[in-house]
Length: 161
Image 1 (cartoon, rainbow, N blue to C red):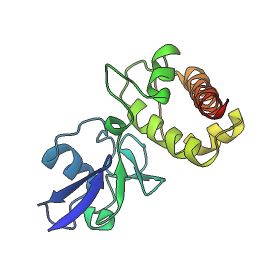
Image 2 (cartoon, rainbow, N blue to C red; image 1 turned 135 degrees about the horizontal axis):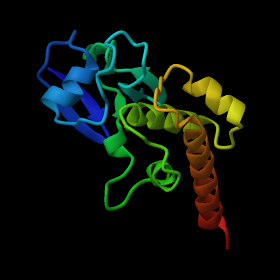
Image 3 (cartoon, one colour; image 1 turned 180 degrees about the horizontal axis):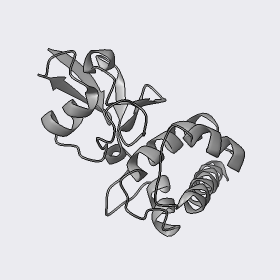
């Protein structure tokens, strides 16, 4: 049996070690934010964070997540208390159909955790693996910039006298 740390909580996995992480998240653990899109790691709808890096969970066997930290959209906040990135996406109305948004948010979260001050060019480069056909690209950029500013402001406020 494998164990992964999912959104901060250790979870035992019963699935076969070669089962795609996406299937484990959705079918075994009941988390449905990561979506099945292409199944080939080409659309980004399944993006989650593994030890700080954005990955395609549809092509990642769960055995590669054993004894590692997996973060999904569900780990960023709740409906009642959205995290800064979730709130920014809501405030900017960055979703149209919403299918790609969880993957976009997870890739953005991985980026902002590494580089808290980002340019639009860096965001575009980092989000390139994630496809969106709705056309909310400019709102997505604004949401990520808003989240970066919100996190920077709250961090500054936390250390201010």
